[in-house]
Every structure is written in C-alpha cells, then in structure tokens.
Length: 312
Image (cartoon, rainbow, N blue to C red; front, side):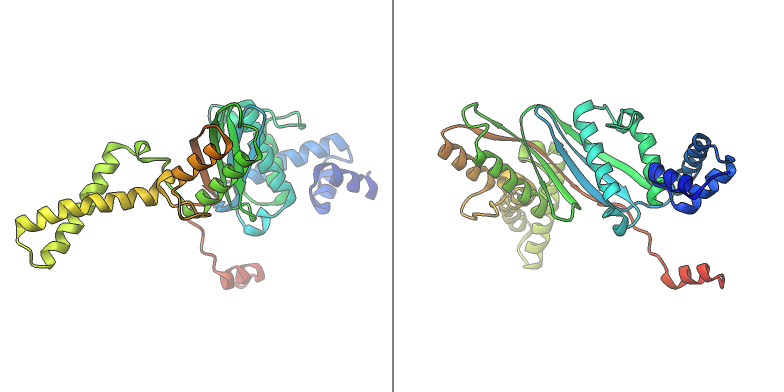
C-alpha cells in the first residue's frame, strides 16, 4: 500500500513525526495527497486543543525595511521550544509581515500572506503548532513607518527594542547615528523607561503621582511632629524634587545616559547631533519583553511523572 520511502517523503514535506506520517498514509490508503490533508486536519485539531494552554515563553523579533519597521512578540509554552529554529524563523517572518503588509491589527496580521508559503499567517501558525507540539500565540506587534529605525535585541531574544529617530538629511546615513540608536535601545532594554518624555504622560497620571508623593511627604513631616500647616508647606516643596526624580526614572530623555553618566539621554543626543553637524530627535520607541505580564503555570513535576506512569 505504501513504502518506507513514502513515509520518509511525507515526513520531509510536512515536518511531522514518523509515526504520525505512517498513520496518515494508513488512514488514507497510501494516497499521498490525502495523507497530507489528513495531517492538516489533525494539525487543526491539535492546534485547537493546545490553544488553551499557557504560552508564557517566546521571543521578540524585529524587522527593518527601507521605509518601515516592526517589532513583534510571539509566545510559546516552554523556554526549550522558544529556542527551536523553526519557531524563531516564524517569529522573524511575522515581524517582516507586520512591517511590509501594514496590518491594522492582530486579526489582519493573521490573515496576511505568509512569505513563500502561499497561505495566510494563521495557517502557518497551525503548521508550526503541529510540528513543534506546543501552543503558539502572536501576542502583539508595533509597526513604524519611514524614518531612521534602529533595533536592539538582547542576546537571548527575550527583550527587544525598536526606536525611531528623526535626523537632518546630511547625517541620516552616518554610522554614528545607527550606533546612537543601538545605545539607546540597550538603555531602554535595561532601564525600562515607560515614556519618551513628560509630555507623553497623561495629566491624570501626573496628578495621581503628585498626590502620592505629596501624601507620602506629608506623612513623613507629621511623623517628625511638625505643625500641620508647616507639614503641608514642607510637603509642597518636597513634591517638586520627588516629581523630578519620578520623571528621571520613567522618561527616557530624563534618564542618565547609561554609557556616559555625565549626560542625560536628551543631552547626549544633542551632543552627538552637534558633533555630526546636524539634528537628531527621538520620535518614539517600543520595548517588548517575552512573556511579560503573563501568569505562568506552576507545574508539579512529581504529579506529572505520576500521571505519565499511570499511578495518579
């Protein structure tokens, strides 16, 4: 009905395990096309079954084209599978699709054509679930248009940064500008600024932080047994300094530049621009950390072993 060579050929084409390929050919009476279809159907069922499982590991991928760029987070269940070359390539291709196809949202990204496959991203995702054997989720992406787009990916691909600079025409292709972008990306990866500058923070968020700092300062002054009116006056003065400290922590341009603490980030960017004889402005940045904010499942190893042994 079919030979070992048929099984091997089906495995090479689909990437599916040998036993599943043999079963597919058995179920399809040796018809190769039907066997491929059977595996596809099985893959769909497998993907749906795995979709409810927590995917808290993964990678961050960045793709930069001539006039666009994108950063994407793609998740999977285990750190071991996150190192799978097929999974990493899938994540890289997802970032490329996001940059080049300009999808409006995740649904549009999943419906977009996957490069070189002749089918949409969502079908290739199902294929990867079938081959790798774990739930895979495209969690989020951000796309930038034309500009000086620079990326930084930490060596383990767990943290990625995409940053866009605006420069004067005479320096946009300078190696020093690209180096500045990478240095800023490294800073963002390490120090986690939440905003570009204070103008990026909503008035409501600033007011909330101001109230927190005022109430903390007021309580400290009361503990020092200051009269209430004096405690309030001193607290008002303390708030200004503490808000400056807050902006230094959460705003990129206010942070001390990591590679040269004599400068703030804003001052260092101006310094580089002056050295190059042009202008540089940080437009925006995106920092992704794989699995950030996802509650990971706490596995009971002894219980899993017992289940596999049939003793539980």
